[in-house]
Image 1: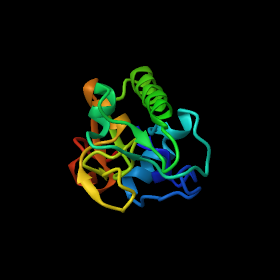
Image 2: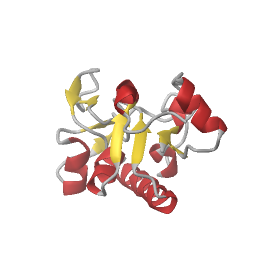
Image 3: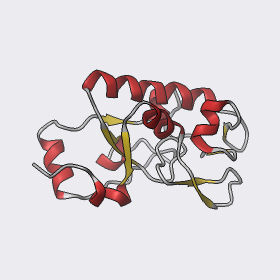
Image 4: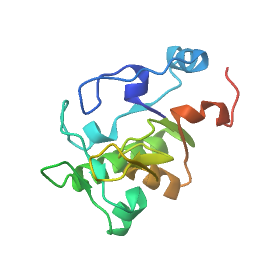
Length: 154
């Protein structure tokens, strides 16, 4: 499983993508071995959309009911929860055990996310989708951890 924005799909909040150039990712994509996801779109949010950040507690806090995902004007937690569930359902349906997701995203971040202050401040933490995938035994890496993937390129 891979974040759709890393494959060049313009699904980010700002309507852009952030293509990740990697020879074996390109090869896996060409051979139909990747399942792209955008939990925010799958949860019902449009492109473009206002940026969102998680209040302290990150993705695990969202699932525990102690944190929320918000834009500057509204609570969008329910969209993030729905999108995370769609990603998990895809992972289960496809037998996926590993995901490569976009770092810093309130959905997909695996090590670092924005702190909820909208001041571009990063904290250690994970997004809503990453937390759910990990709770269900799926290993999640950020694009900056590509060298840690547990399998060899085909």
